[in-house]
Figure (cartoon, helix red, strand yellow):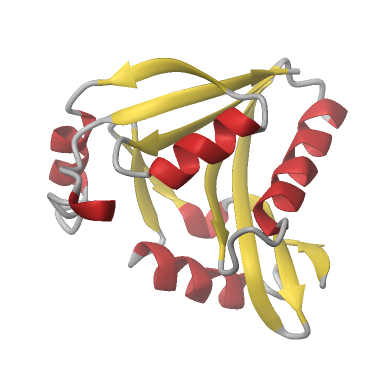
Length: 157
């Protein structure tokens, strides 16, 4: 296994991976449409196959993780990718890293808290707004949980 930065050489493969996980390269966060095909990030490979991907945006002195996907849970892929983003955020002199997930994503809620992120905000019924921009967002999410809210986590650096 090895890690590479997202680049023009692997962008098409990354976009295909994003579409396979998120159904498009468009993501809606806090009522804003984000084009994931333009984001920076890191890819974990096994040979030529993507095992995991993290994308992020740095604005001023904050880093925001936009996506983190691992095809094999409990193998350290997500943690390794997260640590790469933390490393970059520190290099860029960011004061914190933020990430938003939905209320149904119990695995992400557990993952981020175990790695030092604190829950800082609840965007109540945020998915109602998001569905206006991306109607393909389902009403029901993981484990049959109604998909309604966004939860923001932060890690101070």
